[in-house]
Length: 116
Image (cartoon, rainbow, N blue to C red; front, top):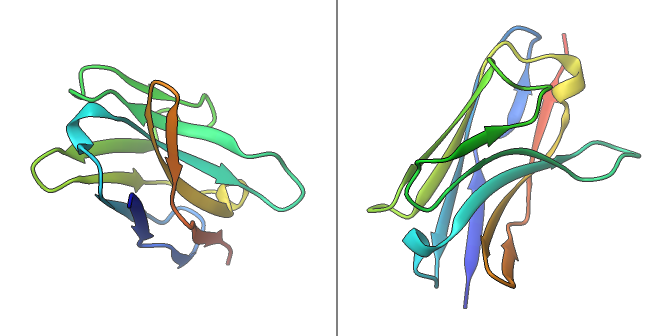
């Protein structure tokens, strides 16, 4: 059974930082492209960042470029999202995603709220 468990969300002031972590189990982690998505109230889920299985390819949404970084540790089966210079518009539920071919798995999400 595949499980993706996110952690690290919370309330932070504008300009602050948070690090989200996703722990994966039940899959061969190093075979999967890992991604972080987010969904704000009333909006569609959007891709924030993804990282290839070997970490050679990394992509970011334009809205987070230069502020967010994505890391993966294939030995620990984790993928982290470091979020710096957070803005109120970054407020959303953040989801971890694992993808390989037609297989796709989601975590339960973690809330990030950026507010003063």
